[in-house]
Length: 137
Image (cartoon, rainbow, N blue to C red):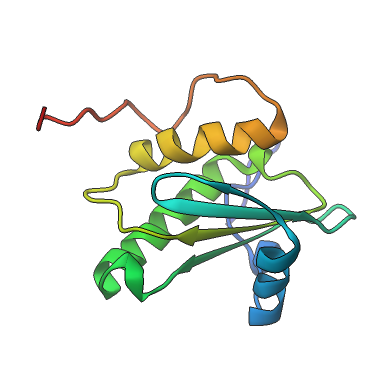
């Protein structure tokens, strides 16, 4: 896939993934941690210019369909918000509870504040789409 000049790549190439179980465990063991209702995010400093990210959804996150959907949404979240994953860091996102009816906007609404706290940024607009409100009030 060719990226037009002036635009950043929105992919999730293998060079940006935590590829081995050992790498993932190192981040979880040594990294700083923050929790949201459905996710736990770990981050440690690797140094250098590479950013690395990994996503995990165990069996407690539901059946195969639910786990794969959660991972797909988290990969898309990473692609859209690479600026929240600074170069020189390794980040692991673990799905703890299955988010019911998760859509990209709900994932953004849950993870953006947690990641911005680390980054020290303010709450700005999100390109994840409109907020989804629950009709079961």
